[in-house]
Image 1 (cartoon, rainbow, N blue to C red):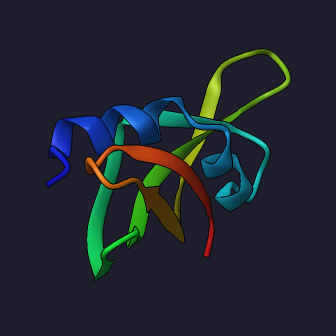
Image 2: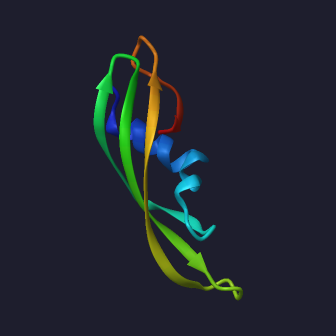
Length: 87
């Protein structure tokens, strides 16, 4: 079984989450949360939420937007994540 820490680490370092950003901002890693909504022998479907930091032209944070989406994590026989895709 996958450890929650491994999934969190993957989400904090994957580029796929940026597809859910609405303002081309930065993902606030500490705000990333997920819920497993479907389990299959070779994949997990997860629902992810996070905050996107919106910056002004001056470089100051002006807002935060809630973002969300679904990802499918591909799992190999030993139970390791071998890939992910938008779902």
